[in-house]
Length: 189
Image (cartoon, rainbow, N blue to C red; front, side, top):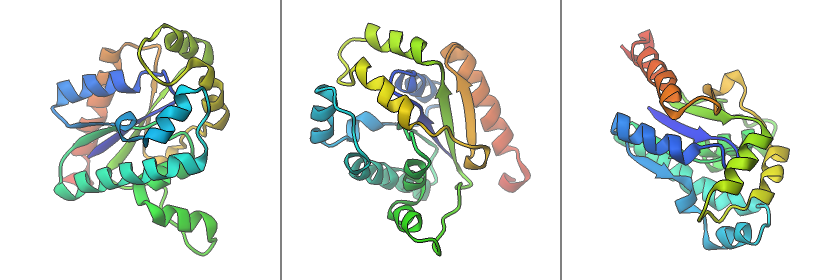
């Protein structure tokens, strides 16, 4: 089982990822660590990334997800995954790009053992968190661009929505219930 922890910058993805990794004993792959240097420099200058900027990063994370799935391990991946296409790339790699440009090619909206944890909250709360945090290259001024392109995941995308007004411990309880429900489902027995 793979959880992709997603949402706009500053919503708490890394904090939740660290907490889940510690509590569950699952490896955590922090998406920020896989950005090409050019992307980091661009965001540090206050410039929003384009789809082209994100593509190599998303494909790298897809490789990590595939490696974890192939090994049969549970894992956590932190990635903003702001658009449906980005989530499809995480699941299906370059096949998702082919499908998006070719109407006769289609990829499923989900993968049976990969789930998105969508951390959502309002702009003002997240902006205040970003202004208060130290040492991160992502500038608070870029938050608006993230909200502008955000396509919240739909129910058909294996998503568990988590309200960031809740504590990390409360979100963990929701995730734990989800894991128990998934692992006890007839398909898993």
